[in-house]
Amino acid sequence: MAMWAYITRLEKNYPQTRLYSHHPPFSFSLHAQMANPMSLFVLQVLSFLLLYILLLYLFNVILGRFRRVQDFSGHKPPTYPIIGCLISFYKNRGRLLDWYTELLAESATNTIVVHRLGARRTIVTANPKNVEYMLKTNFNNFPKGQPFTEILGDFLGYGIFNVDGELWRAQRKFASHEFSAKSLREFFMITLEEEVEKGLLPILESLAVTAEVVDLQELLRRFAFNMVLKVSLGIDRCCLDPSQPVPPLTRAFDKASEICAKRGAAPLFIVWKMKKWLGIGSERQLKNAVEEVHRYVSEIIINKKRMIEEGESRSEDLLSRLILAGHEEEVIRDMVISFIMAGRDTTSAAMTWLFWLLSCHPDIEKEVVKETRLVMERMLDYDSLKELNLLKACLCESMRLYPPIAWDSKHAVVSDLLPDNTPVRAGDRVTYFPYGMGRMEALWGEDCFKFKPNRWFVESNDRRELQEVCPCKFPIFQAGPRVCLGKEMAFIQMKYVMASILDRFKIKPLSSASPVFVPLLTAHMAGGLEVLVQKRTQTTSINKQLN
Image 1 (cartoon, rainbow, N blue to C red):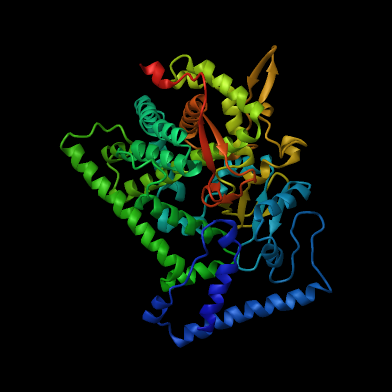
Image 2 (spheres, one colour):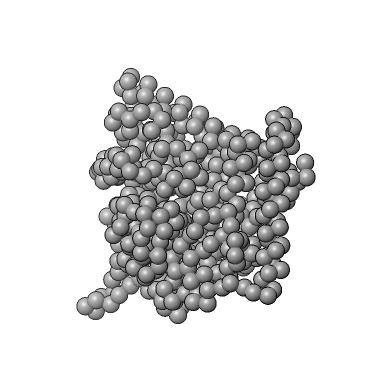
């Protein structure tokens, strides 16, 4: 029992239980332990391992007072024999993102090598040349790899975002064809207009009248979830009103993504693996959440198949297209879950941060509102949305500072050499770091920490034009063969929603404090964004255009 008490304390003190979520730390189920007692031999082995780690830690702390093995070239955090940078990692557990960013900024190549007890050798880079080499030039040597797919395998299964090789290529080919289809784009635009006009704007109108406080992040997350459910599964939207309870499917998705993210960031992977083997604590929660998601999606697949056979489905949504393509049910389920996972939080996170940033920069907000009203004097459609250049620049700037995906990792198949001459060993984890890249003075200048949408424009022939930035410098949507297929739809959705809201309403955050950035599988704002919604005057609403 002393060992379990230690593991419980270990879990409560791990950085991820505070850094990566504002929810309370995981708890253990002692009832489950008593119902399934381990053998004495296993207990002894585990106790020995934990005691061994503690003794190593204490030994090296004492040793460090006399001799510290550190690479002063800036390519490593403070590193010790055996335990590597575990001490520094623990000390910076509440600010890992900024700690890595500082180390990368100090490195001449914007790359660091991290050795840590309990984790494989990791290379973290904010160097665009390295990013291009990983994601494009030598793509085949840097797949997601078994360590990554193992972390997300229980949740995403064999979906497109969690596989490599031929299975990935087959799914990518199908998805690429469908995302480029005109029919899907038209279905997406019809759904977007309906969800905004019949769902989002009436809720905001009511909040403006009653002067109620609302968590804007939660409202936008529900909206994005409704959109992805309609486009992916073809099902009616869930309740958009934040005052109503979170739907069970949403809770299950949140829990599964949260626990999987903490698996990947755990200082000692053996902890979550042991808990999974024993079926206790967070791993039991994950299993229950995944089962609920699978049950929900599988039921929808069965019903959709029946509707197709009876001629009741028009095959506009992605699920219908997958079924008609003849894919197996398990593959369909995993692909759909991957699409939902990719679309539900990324756009809502980017918009939430942008609303907060605009509230901090009223002059920029004024210019954005002016631009949106000029465009909305006509019909707000697929083509007119492309004219919202300042709004797009603001979205890019928001995602530069607060990327929906803070970091992404690949695993080297064979030994390699990155363009900045950093050696890579077979099996190494190689991580590119969008959060840190957005804060590199070498890439964005001395004002890299400032919200400055003008940096996305260039002067050309006396005209101010929006410039295309290399995706390896701004890898928010990845780059190379795995570049995000939904990038265009994401921008269309964000611009449509932002323009519709900014035209009618002013969003005023209650707190003047800077929010905390929380990087789970997709990032979000800790505690949400509580705001008051106020009506603007002289609006040019879409309703007016439609009537």
